[in-house]
Each structure stands twice: as C-alpha cells, then as structure tokens.
Amino acid sequence: MSLQIGDQAPDFKLNSSDLAEVALSAFEGKKVIIHFFPMAFTGTCTEQLCTMRDNFSFYEGIDAQVLGISVDSPFSLAKFKEVQSYQFPLLSDFNKETSQAYGAFYDEFVFGLKGVSKRAAFVIDEDGKVIYAEVLESAGDLPDFKAINDSLKA
Image 1: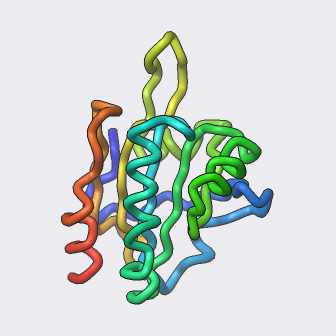
Image 2: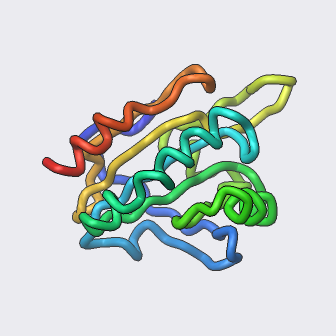
C-alpha cells in the first residue's frame, strides 16, 4: 500500500548519479518533491522529469528540493541527467527498498521485467510528513503537476 497524506515519510539513503549518498533526512526543514519513475531514457519518464526541469525556478524559488528516484543504476542515471540537463539529484533505488516503502513498485512490469518503480509523486513537508501522494498504475500517465504545485503553496 502506498503512503497516504499525513503519514511520516520513510527515510532513505540512496546513491545519486554523482555517487554521493543522499538521505531524505538531510532535507529536514524544507519541502521535498519526490518523483519515482520506471526507467531512464523512456518517453514518459523523460517528459515527467523534463517538466520538473523546465519549472525548476518555481521549486528553487520556494526553497523546495526536487529528487528523482528509479531502480536504474547510478551510472545510467548519470548519463540520463547529463543528456537532459536535470538540475536536481537522480537517485538509484537499485535494491528496490525505497520504491517498496513508498508503495511505488511494480512486482512485474512490461517485457517481463520484475521490480520496477511505479510512476509516482510525493511532497514531503518540513517535518517529514506526506502532504501530497500520487501513485499511478499506468506507466503511461503523468503525475498531476498542478496538484503537486498547489500542495507546495499550502
């Protein structure tokens, strides 16, 4: 089951595309937008993260941290970040623990692939509580970016 509004967000420590360890708890005191995505270099995932990239000044202007998480390796994510010029960390949930903790996990995905992050978006407040949660069953759908932004303004 995915996290609900009001739940305490599970902390995590994941390796970034820069091979640095990133923990959710490091952002205590600021809002965090977490975007889970199935796979780097795929159409809808690129669109999801490019939407965040193209609106980055809004998030930066309200001192909110954007994070992208998938089960891709840090090395694949590094190339994806470079090619798309993302200004925010991409984190590797290669061991699939964070995706499962957030309820954003496909046991089985397309082409017989097992253990892939679902497309999802969460907004975590300054105290580590979930103030927005959206887990999509269809990997072809995009999160509701307006609702995400509205939750940040509340």
